[in-house]
Every structure is written in structure tokens, then in C-alpha cells.
Amino acid sequence: MSQQAPAHEWDKTFPKSDHVTHEKVTFTTNFGITLVADLYKPRNAEGALPAIAVSGPFGAVKEQASGLYAQTMAERGFLTIAFDPSFTGESGGAPRYMSSPDINTEDFLSAVDYLVCREDVDGDRVGIIGICGWGGIALNAAAADPRIKATLASTMYDLCRISGNGYNDSADDAATRIASRKLVAAQRTADRLSGEQALTGGVADPMPDDAPQFAKDYHAYYKTPRCYHPRSLYSNDGWAVVSASYANARFLYYTDEIENAVLVMHGEDAHSLYMGRDAFAKVKGGVNPDNKRFLLVPGASHCDLYDGGGRGAIPWDALTSFFAEHLA
Image 1: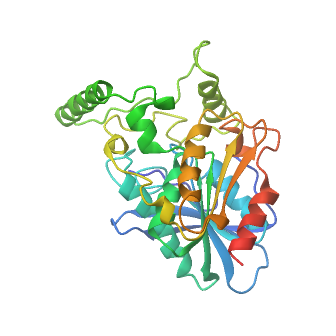
Image 2: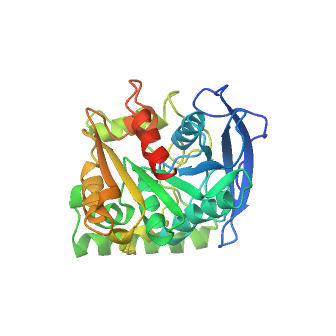
């Protein structure tokens, strides 16, 4: 069962803005799953507004980075929603803590459905923001839906690439993938026999001293008061072990056919930078290259672009300019 907070409760990991209004909304995907979102609207706004749907990071909830992005962009004149993906947070779907390339792409498309049907949204001026793994999902959604006029992929992961090949493609061999599939298959049987779903465990806590820096950065974000949230997967017990469909899927296959604007933003010091560069190269090499941009943030790590990293790393003015131009 999804866990839902009272609608009046401010349970975000960032301060509430006095410059926007906030309400909780729901919409249903074409897979029949009800998603819960926080809607942010510029206070005293009138008429039909440009709108942006936001989700991510992968394993987070809307009370974390996606909500911060949504509220900040609402302060800058956009109607925004930050939603919990299927099977996570306050959204529906059972069993819990599952992921899927097609279902998650549909989550974004259904968010667009919801926005274009609102009377206070200009349906010809809708964009999306995906953070971390949801940056890749955002590109996948933009390739599928020309209603999405502008897409930001922030500090993105290519989930199929990293699930199938490991970090930096270090496990890109058949033997490793076959061994992984055997482990997942055995866990599926064990889950059915026990009637319980094994979880991956989220971000390690305590974090080993010899862990790579990016893992320590994840711990600092998800496991400390900085951004811990009780509904967040990575703040707690993680994804289902058997949630492995990204490792065997074709993903980001037609992103070179995205006609509308794309901005790929990555930190200079992010461990995931290679995924953003490669995804951008494909997008840029396709149709309408003039409206495709790559923004490298100096000195920023992967997690710095979740919440600014305590040093204002997110270039909000550049993001505002991008969406203002392409949702004009």
C-alpha cells in the first residue's frame, strides 16, 4: 500500500515558498495506476500558464529533489507538478518498489496528459524535467511524445546501460549479465514461496570508509537530515530485488528523432557524466540539432544537482531561460 500524508501537511525536505500556491493532485496512467503529485502555481497567476512536469531522482520521492525543482520553477512563472512514479511514494501500484522502462515512461506521458487538460495550462507550452535516472526517462518520453516542447535531463543516468553494463561499462560482458539474471530469477522464486518481497536495502548506512565518493554523496543526500524522507526508497529499504527490467530493455533508441528542445545538464565532477555526454551526442546528432544544448556545471558532483549541494550549484537562471524560450 502507498503511504499518504495529510494534504495540509508540509512534509518536504525544502522550505515552503510564499511565492507559490501548493496543492496535492492525482491522475491515472494508461496502465491504470493512480499517481500522486504536488502542484505548484505562481501566486496570483492568471490565465493559461506554461507548465512543467518533474520527477526523480530514481529512488527518490516528490518531497525531495523533484519538489525543489518544481517549486523553484513555479516561483519563476511556470505551473509545475512533481509526481511520485508508479509503485513508489504516495502513488499507487502493487507490488511496491518496482520499476519498468515502459511504465515509467508512461508516468511522464500521463503527467503531460494531466497538464494539457487543465484549464489553467496552455497545452501547447508543456515541458518536463527528469533528474538522475528520470533524466534518461525524460528523454525517452520526449522521443515518444511531441507534445513535450522542452525537456531537461538533469544529472542523468541511462538506466538500461548502467543496469546491463555496470558503472563505466565495467561489467559489459555476457557472463556477468547471465549471473545477474540467475540471481534475480532465484529471488523471484523465493519471493513467491515466502509471500514477501525482498528489498535491495537502499543506500548503505553506515557507509564504508573505502566507498567511492559518489556513494558517500548518495549517503549525504539520502541518509542525513539534508534530504532524508520516510517514503524515499533510497533513504530506507530500496527497490525490490526483482525489479530488474531495465537491464534487459532497449532504451533511448529514438532520441535522435526528438524534434523539440532538449537541455542535458551535468556536473563537471559527476561520476555519471559519461552517460549524459553520450546521450546528448545522440540527441544532438539527430533532427533539429540547433535546439539541443549541453550545460556543464563547473565543479558540481552528481548529487549537487539534486539540491544545489549547499553551494547553489543548480543554475536556475539558465534553466528558466531555456524553458522561457522554448515554452514561449
